[in-house]
Length: 125
Image (cartoon, rainbow, N blue to C red; front, side, top):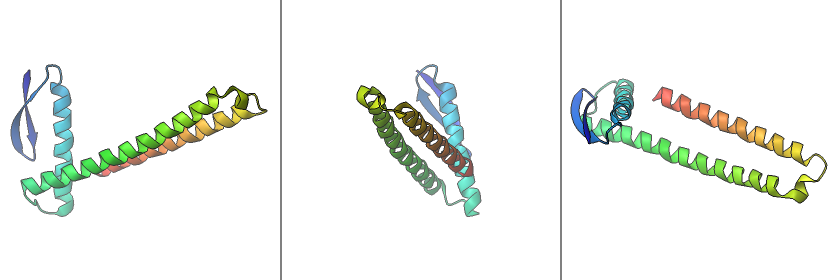
């Protein structure tokens, strides 16, 4: 087990992690540190370490929950489209394959837009 020193909000912490996960842990710490700095900058004052960490954690938890909702919606759509593809009787109908391809293209476009939205939210944070 490795120990990594990380810095969040100008404070150093020694954190244990599995061997080989050191760089990943540093990237996570950099993400949290960047969000705290952005929050403090947006507020114009440092609200205190505990409060800043709490607000940052709430923001990140909100993003996680929203991503889970989007993932569930995408999963349902993928299952629906998969069922359409697997239903041989429906595929035999005139133009059905084109309809499925169009539906999949629309779904992929929606996914791309959702990803862009999430990326913009992360950039803003």
